[in-house]
Structure formats: C-alpha cells, structure tokens
Length: 445
Image (cartoon, rainbow, N blue to C red; front, side, top):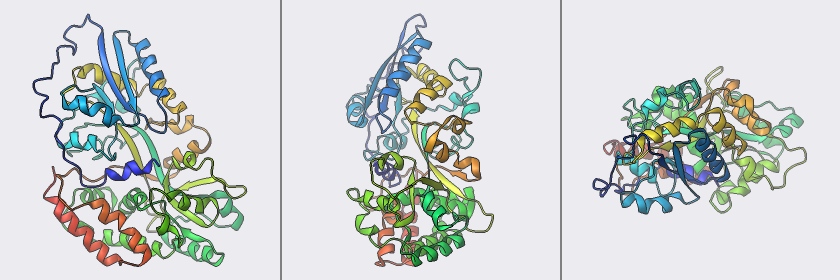
C-alpha cells in the first residue's frame, strides 16, 4: 500500500535530533580539493515499488559516463533503519532518495533541524552530459512548492523525483455502457450520483481516509487558487473558516451521502483493497487514488471489459479550474555530506535522458517535460492528465515543531470516516480543523 507512506508526512512533524554529534565528524577534504583523486560518492535510495535494479543500472551508467567517480550504493526498503545509525554517528550519505511522508519521518526531521544542503544552484547547472540546464528539463512548478522549498525562502533543498498524479479512478467501460459522461463539475457529479443510485451503484468510495489528502488539497486549490492554498498550508489565521474552505468541507460532506455503505468498515490498512475492489466490481463509480493502484490491484478480479480511467476532480463552477494533485519523491543532500559538489553533479545526472529512460523502464516517472509522450499503456493515460487541461497541485503543510496531542492529519483527514458514518457533522469538523491550525501556527519553523 504505497499510500500509507504518503499520509504520515501530512501530520505534525516529529522532532528527533540527528546532528548533535556531527560537528566533530564533518570532513570536506574529499570534496574537490584533491581533483586528481577518484572520488567515492555515497548514494542511498529507498527501494519502493519500482525495485532496486533500476538504481544499480543508473549507477553503472553514471560510473561509465563519469570515470572519476566510484559510487557506493545503498538501496533498502527500510532505508531509515540502515542509514540512521551512521548518521547519528556523523557519517552521512552524500545523496539520499527518501521522500517526506514516511512513518519514521527522517526527511522531515532533517528539514526541521535545517540539516539539508541548499541545492538551488543545481537547477542552473547543465544536466550531466547534456547541453541543457536542469530547470529547463523539469516540468514548471515542481520546484516552487513547500515540498521542495520547505522554508518558503525561495531556496530549494529537495529535488523532485518520481511522481504520481492522483485523481478519481473509475471503470471507463461501465460509463460507456451506461451512456454516462465523466462529470466536469460537482453539479454534474451529484446528478450522476442520482443516476447511479437508481441502478444500485454508489457514486463514491475511498480506500482509507489517508487518500483524502490529495483529494482535499485539490479541492482547496479549486476553491481558492494557489495563493489561498499556500495560506492554508501555512496555517493562516481564519483560513479554514473562510468561504473557500467552507465550500470544500461542504463538498466532502455531500459526497459522504453518496459513499458506498461498506466503505468505512473497510477503510483501514488491512482491508482497504476491499474498497478499491468496489470499483473493479462496478459497485462504486469513483475513488480517489494514485497511479500505483493499477499494479496494486493487478491480480484482482474485475468486471468483464474493465478498463481503468482517471480524471481530475470536477470543477466547482462551470469552466472553473480542475486539479489533480501530484505526489512526488524527493532527493536531497545532507548538509553534513563529505562530497557536496560531486553529489550535486550526480543530482544533475538523474535528470539526463539516459537516467530518465532507465527509471521509466521500471515505471518510475520523473517530472520531465514531454515525458507523457514517451509512455505507453495506462501510464500514458495517467501522466497525460495535465495535457488535458487539469492543473497540478503540489506541496503539503509547512514544517512545524511537534505539538503534543495535535495532528492536522488526524483532524482534517481521519475525521472523514465519522462524517461518512454520520457520527460527526461538517460544521464541527471544520471548527476542529481551524483550532488545530491555530495551535500549529505558533509552532511554525
């Protein structure tokens, strides 16, 4: 369940000091000062659903292209457990592929401790072996969010890597069979809900409430635009009680009325696939999800002729903006790394045509301009969503000090189970979110 890792990063961030003993350990003597020597670059990468072979291939290709560097590669599904002990002892990798949103929150901890290297200059460097700057290859917007610029100071500390568009997933064949159109506005969504109800089909389900992060963020962007969204992510006073936020809360409240009745009972880490199965069995029309769901449900039974479809959220008003939120993994350089310049050079290489092709072959897609044209099958459909008028939403809540007993993720997202079951009402939910926002505002980093 790839999504389990995404939700954790939306909660109040953990605070664990990892750098207390680094001052006596840091030695930059190997960072370009002996240019005739072959450098050893330590790269640590999370082994995710894409596997570890792609990293081996990329490192081999890089060593061949840059014979002045030997790369020591660490790839592990539990990367934090492998590298944290060394980091606590002051021995840091030079480059790390480990995004925010993991349960152990290692990346968030380094962000809070201001222990990441400023990599803004990497954007202006040429991609290794190519005559184009890194910023010239990246899709616009991916380095302008709190996910890459966590201090909102105009500087980039995390580089965007593999990304997954999110949206509403459905069975294209079912809609074609019924003669139903994919809703473009929420009014059309409610009308479709009535049609589906008449045929014993629910309009909506969700795997777990964790999937409402991308969903709700997209709603906020549709309701108020990027500036409003960024204020919400930085806990601006009163923002969650504004008319824009109220509209988003009300939409989720109404959607609860159209949610398949067994959803809440199965909306947990053990049974969430039962909710996803509702869409495959034509018992529910739409569910919020990401591109990983195709592989996750690859062996699951499905209705005859089932065909995946994906759409951005319906617009709030006719011809209004439609958003599909994007999650992406991040690569960064510890401030205590020994080989920072060599690390930055390698970081430019991961955006090269050569590296991009290796990653894409494993299903790991980077935010590179024109990437959708090189994809096939379901991925071509999913990653072309932004070519069809949808806008990309990115970035989560600003980093804060931990506040005991306070969690924005619990209050904003996990409460939705209670909204669907009828145990709580939307107005009380909205008030609770504003209260949490007030508590976190003073804890901003």
